[in-house]
Image 1 (cartoon, one colour):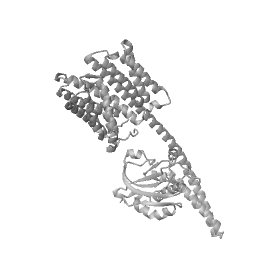
Image 2 (cartoon, helix red, strand yellow):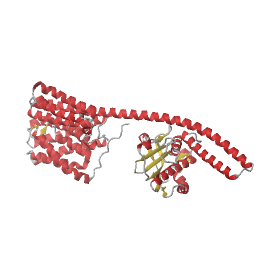
Image 3 (cartoon, one colour):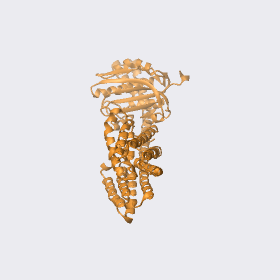
Image 4 (cartoon, helix red, strand yellow):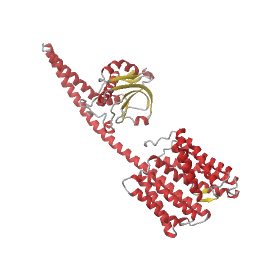
Length: 549
């Protein structure tokens, strides 16, 4: 499963108002640059950057920003000298195309990082293509109806408009997405190669699109190689910058008919579009492949680490089971001899101490057996709410001074299938652990909450502990929350490892026992914690079937 992509932004009016002015101004500036390099009439450019800006702005800043796109397009076309009716038609087409594409991509759950081949294809085929086609249709018709372009040039106007919008979305929108996700990440690396690629693209691009003859052709091919290299090594953050430099120079060369684009008419338009489209497609494909390769390597490393950890814990469990069994036998011998001494009239006080030590040793063996899954379980349908209400006085009495219990048990929820004794052991261990964590910071409340819900395979994959028999379905859960010091990722990774503890007096067996119990009962454990933000532990048991109730 791929790592989750960036969240879609919240479309709020304050956010829209904050960015409306800058987006509209940027649209006008980019449109002015594009119109200066127009190829058909005064409104069509072979690389229309505002189309990429419009879609990127709506994807990143929210759909409520569409008025800024409309106003920017309206002003840009009016400054170009078009009648107001034509300006309104073009602005409506540009805005509607970007808004519909953004809404559709959001509905299709596009990952804004474009870090998979599926998302790259979805962006091109379901976003860029239809958006460019719609904008070209409305825009070309507006030019013809407004008299800016003769009717017999409608097809040519539509084709070049489509080409300009399509390449604009392919080149500019990924650049905005990359800047949003990780601003200039590649250029901030310790290596000088990313910056060198950008500067080299600038130099080679000048030769390719402003030079002449064979050197221009060779340099144009080298530009494509630079973009592909940047995409393969660094992904979107660097390759989009390199492509933007090459694309701008290519547009200048096409408008001046110099360098690689020393041609005329339809040949120039088609050749320019083919070059830019090939460059953008190579960029997106290689970036997606590089991202998927990195994700695959990360997953492989995680699987290998998990396998090594599982082997280590299995070895510890095997040793612990043997130790617990043998130690239990020794304790039984000690307890039996203590009973014999008591029957013979030996002093009570030493015998009481011996029996107390035996009980503590037996409890330790129970924890080891719980971790290794050797506890005799008798699952039955139980109400978490009822069990916790019955345990509340005991839980409160066991908390350290300065800590208190706050139980939100209003929601009854369904009955879960678990062993009553082991349920209580789990609750005691979690509440005790939370109380000890609070004691380090001067105390506070330990909060208990119960609830129920569905856990699918994706949700269970995020659990810190699951059993071999844990399956997706409906679960009842208990949540234990404390506002203690929290844990680092390193500590959290070893939380359920036996004999690991960060406390001076701890044995490191409470939470491993919880893990063993929940695995044996086909449950799951989720831990969320950060330093300074407290800890939340959620334990979930499968809901009891109707035949068990």
